[in-house]
View 1 (cartoon, rainbow, N blue to C red):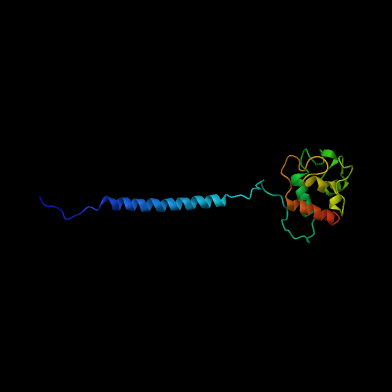
View 2: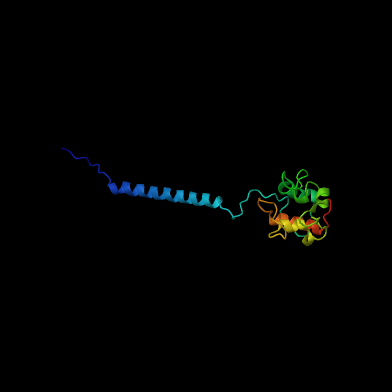
Length: 163
């Protein structure tokens, strides 16, 4: 019988080839997993979209009631069952400029906005941590962002203009 001159490669070649392929595939999968985890990362403050009308941190900017403050009030305060024109919870109505400026809070017994003085404005006290009276607002909802609080403070500091 005549023997063929064709020689089979050892089984180790196939094993080494599969081993290299599977290592490469594993490395690609690990890189993909890391990329997916990094892209889904969070800063721990994921409370949904922030209703910041203008996140500009410039302290010298002029805050507009219609452009900056009213959208905050409409999204977080003047909602049904809270400080809207129908409910006016605790005597506070933040539905419009005039309503906000004329609101006298039941807990404080004075206008909630003290134009020119945010530190003496009950509204500011209620949106910052640890208010003097009752619970922080918005009640049973995520607190306002610091940028929104800063905008409200700046607007009141500027005299709470109807602009």
